[in-house]
Image (cartoon, rainbow, N blue to C red):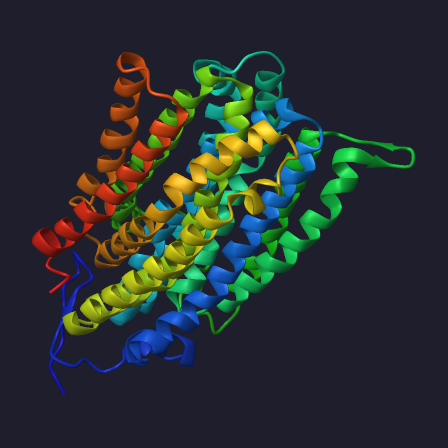
Length: 472
């Protein structure tokens, strides 16, 4: 058996074939280091992918309910959606990835006490970050939507939906942190099952809240947002109870909830570059929505409904990434570089396959997707034009995101920021120039968006090969 050495600064452990640490003593946790690569990745990813798919469908269902109230209401929800996705990807992807990476690396290195204290710090920091998100949105939401070009009924709808939804930002951040801690210990099933049950219940009661029933008046789009806020609070209670169980590998004590800088730094050194990448990605969405806004509310509704598929695909790839991050981090912490490379290739394969299948399907049958949201033929036509052009480029989205999660697992996220900026440069800035100086129409702008996705995937391969040495 190889002699191991523990690097306290990075959490790395060196050795040829390290034994499974005591911290990974449960069967679920042991799979992080011992399980076959493809089957273990699939087993850990499947529950979260299923949950993310369901949540995407639930979100689409909510949009369908709101869409029945008119194109202004649908445009309002579409305008707020980039910020909803920003919060989701920041809390679950960037911050949650940092949490899962730090906790899993500590478990892989046999530092069970550090893993528990990391978990406690992560939960408290999540509550603070969520409260900050609420404050910013309540103060600046109207200004933001106005800057995008929204006005009149669409602007009023966006502000109304946003103000209610972001009141639940703090519990949203906390339950995503709790889910990341559970996944870091190899338990991806419980948060997925709990989230699925809660999501189905939320979708079931939404029509009653939106439209009303009997003597109960309908709350419109504010009711749709309120249902999501209630879901967030319930999830905090359910996942918090799961974390408190005795056999949870990284179970935080009450004392561990007091943040400590050492553990906060371990999380933030991964989360901050990841957040910058997430902000760049969502800034691209925001810029592209701003480019569409001058074409009118119908164009916003069409692009927003068509682009919602991408918002669905990102969480699906996150499901793969949620398994990839702890698997890579645990193997990296245990010094098993060969397994890290195998896991990276497996994650990339899943990402390309999932996004490619969805992209080709909607490119062939775009109206089938669009009619989920609206019966307006003009809105359907615009959304279909988007899907036909951008759908075939979705495999590059899956590739780039999967490789980024592998980099997160290794705790090295500065270099992949370059790839995250590619899409903004090509589609965002290039699109702005094309529209303002060349007078491009919507269809040409959609083609440029597809080119941006392709560039993102290609540059991410280059970065991972040259800078991180993961792909060989």
